[in-house]
Image (cartoon, rainbow, N blue to C red):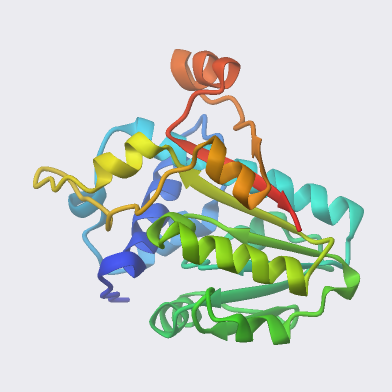
Length: 252
């Protein structure tokens, strides 16, 4: 199946590819057979476009694993709860964490939703909303009564920090008591992303990086990423809490 995307929407293929690279390993830290199947089914030059060191795939998988852990923790406490995945792209998290009872809401741009619905079958407990995560109208379709967790993987760094801050404020007003999990890049990585390169695929520039001031303004706490393989991702980074990408939690 042919897929043509550009700009920020193309990053869904980038992250999908790296999840599949990690999942194909015999010692994979992330089991994601659907990511492998999707990459095999899509007519796209994944390796030529996104190929790179295995470090990148493992780092992305560790971030995803942290999100999976938080969703599973939420569902252990609220088995019938609702998870809202903002900017979900071709993430296959629902099938990795499904407890048979969760209600799942996907919010993404119309072009991305069209691709997602062509490639993935959605069941009765899944709702798909075509629209921007920053357009508050999607909130009208969410019932927080059974418990609510909101996730935003690989999304907020592509938008101005002020827009993210406004969205978090709106979530607090509408869904007080819920939890938001998101990721952010370090300031030095955001600055580096704005320098053009021709030798490798470069996603659209990340517009801001997380620091102590922005964490306080969002009311976010930093989550420790799991241990990976090798000296750096397995020992140095987890112990010293190093990393260019951070996972964060906001109690709304």
